Length: 84
Image 1 (tube, rainbow, N blue to C red):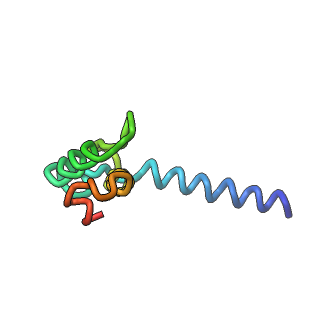
Image 2 (cartoon, rainbow, N blue to C red):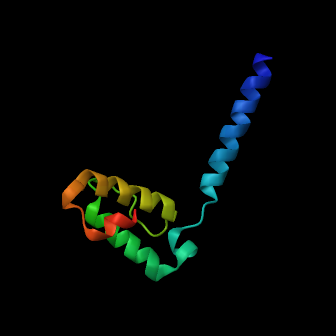
């Protein structure tokens, strides 16, 4: 039974990793112009030294970083932060 559980866990983790690897880039998902807007916003608010603000990353990853950066800025956040 323990072996079956371990096999199931590895299968689920493998599928998750494969799904992440197959995720579209933000540029493919929304087009290069919109993706560049997200990248610019991300770079403006991200406190990370190596933020995921790259149009080749999935949009959700960029949006999550914008949301995180906006939350950290609080009242000093740019107006577009209300969209996230």
